Amino acid sequence: MDLNQNVKLVFDKINDAKKRSPHNQNVELIAATKTRDILQIQTCFELGISSIGENRIQEAEKKLKELPSFNSIKKRFIGHLQTNKVNKCLRLFDTIDSVDTLKLAEKIDSSSNPQKTECLIEINTSNELQKKGFKPKLSKELMSCFSLENLNIVGLMTIGPHTTSEKEIRDSFQALRIFKDQINQELGENKLTELSMGMSNDFELGVEEGSTMVRVGTGIFGPRKY
Image 1 (tube, rainbow, N blue to C red):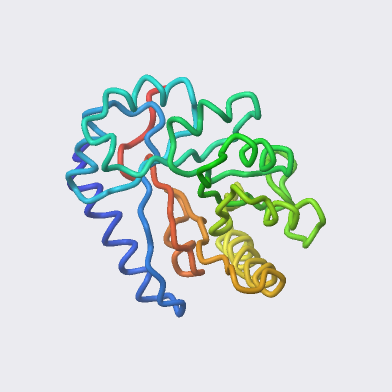
Image 2: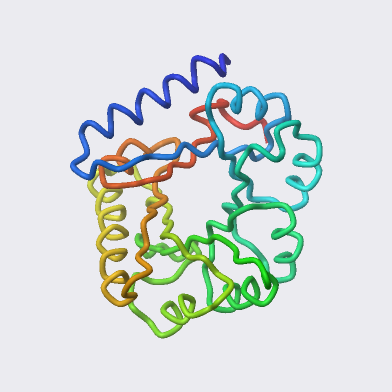
């Protein structure tokens, strides 16, 4: 495994996908670093990746304390977050990219005072039962998240469907982009700007459909050992 080569390849694929996209957006590459060691993360930072994503609080707590570039790397929590782990999560991470219920949003809000927490709202655009997230509807619960004073909600996140069908994946990503526009019509001035969609197997489609953030793990590091 050559991290240098892999990171360059992912950046090249993102840039090529941007050329195919009509949306003319900036795209942030987030290295999904679950089970990866400090040396690998540090190397990614040196190769130009300034954001990492973790989805296990306990693992991240041990790892981030040892990271030399701790203050320079943006640390994003990208997994399902239990409400009883919110306080610890807020001490470790700069953003929570997976707010999937009003209950969780309210807990983050009450724990964030006086500092706002940057968040993404997770939307289940593929309607798969095993996935977390709000339905792509302007429900009372969803819109209530935007009235919470200590949340800085900047965009939406989704995980593409577990399929090899390019059409189904595109449909899921297109649905998130359209839903963002629908929410923005309701919000007034504070518009959502970010769309986090696309992982190792589908990030190029995500970029083509307007993604501003992609979460890549195996595409950078290779398959996980556990």
